[in-house]
Image (cartoon, rainbow, N blue to C red; front, side):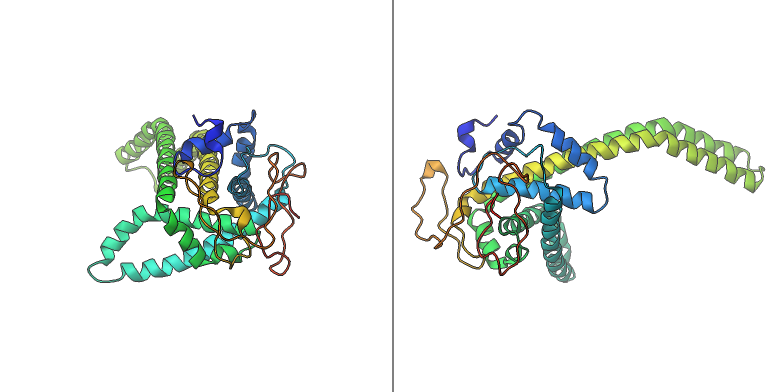
Length: 329
């Protein structure tokens, strides 16, 4: 378990333990997780809201604030707006990557190899997209998440950190898949004998009228669906719960990783990045570049809520040049 001192500033390792420490540092931390699990059942809007909530917590983490996810006074509409921006960023990057991978896999000889490598590399790519989405959340605009040159500079500076986050995402996905398989097979174990009996019955009595056979088959089908319903509901909720926890942990891990880029010193999104911070064990270089008017640092006691440094109202490209600090309207 990460200590309080391990949560300060930028550190190059232990992303999982530090993310878990932030997630669980407040009593009742599981309540928002359960609420978001149910919210995932709401088409489109629920998914965008959950994604936006995770990004706003990650934004707070990237600013250097060690805060748990906010449990009350959450501005749902603002979370949905943040999730929508993240969706657009992911969509654009997804289209571009699909074109590139489609061309690469169609090449003779190496096409199959590229496809196999992409299966593994896709997890690292997913984390790169999360970096782009977090930049969009920090600036509260879509365009900063599409600055390929800046994002590549960040990724190439510390790919090892993102590999750790990608590994966490991969392991979490495997755990979620294992849970789904176990629940599915447990449910099927109760209906397979019934299915075998119906098939054997219809095969043994081939002389039965076709309409009667169809009626027996339909009755057996609906009976199996009814018996599977509780297991399917449980599977949906369990997968949703694991997905929410994995989303929160991976998003805030990206926020911890992004602390090395000194978010408070960012200027306009097209400006160069400031000097990178180093792990405390390696020392931290003096920053040689600072914006003329750096954004103020946020407070610690809030996230997307009116009672603390929550999500500001969305602003246009003309209204905001620098990153939007949590709580800054």
